[in-house]
Amino acid sequence: MIMWIHPVLQTLAALLSLYVLYLGWVRFRFAHLGHKGIVFQWKRHVAQGTAVMTVWALAFVIGLGAAWNNWHVIGITELHYQLGLVMLPMIIFGLGTGVVMDRVKAKRRLLPLAHGVVNALLVLMALCQLYTGVIIIRDMLLA
Ligand code: HEM
Ligand code: HEM
Image (cartoon, rainbow, N blue to C red):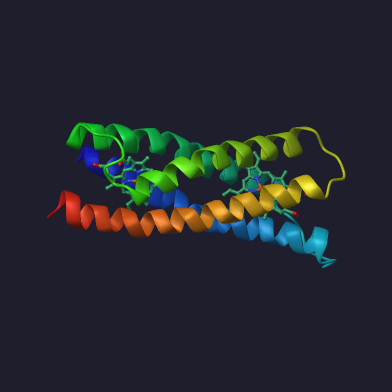
């Protein structure tokens, strides 16, 4: 049953990230496209975004542990592993910029944009991880 911890946590976080991205999209429309009369749910975006990124980072380590436990090697899942490695610094950047923008309020343009682009990419990559993760379960764990 331990083998399911990583896939379940990462799948839930990936699904929640779609909603966090939607909240960020609302902010983007207001800040860059001049759409008026919409409210950015700041606190909800910060709380749920923090939950998503904390789980992504922690479950990354759990995934490594699970792979080591099963096969006594790291990197056996190839593309899934490599994409995970690329995601790690992006997660730190996304969380770091988010925390700064939340704690030190200011009128900004570039930092939110960089934060939004990197995090939107992360959501896309998490969906790729979901795809390759399901294939790993099918071909390497249940076969
Ligand atoms: C943010 C998304 C994800 C990241 C960063 C991530 C990262 C990782 C990493 C680093 C490993 C170790 C791989 C190795 O050493 O070769 C791993 C293993 C694994 N991942 Fe993911 N993963 C993510 C999402 C998912 C999802 C959504 C699933 C399945 C639905 C999944 C299923 C697996 C499986 C089955 C393993 C093999 C380890 C085991 O449980 O025995 N992953 N993952
Ligand atoms: C999956 C995770 C996340 C995604 C997809 C995401 C996405 C976005 C997007 C698209 C924007 C709009 C950017 C713009 O207007 O140019 C935004 C803004 C913002 N995000 Fe995130 N975000 C995530 C996580 C976080 C986290 C963890 C925090 C804080 C700890 C955070 C704090 C903020 C703040 C404060 C803004 C507004 C900045 C401003 O306009 O001054 N976000 N986010």
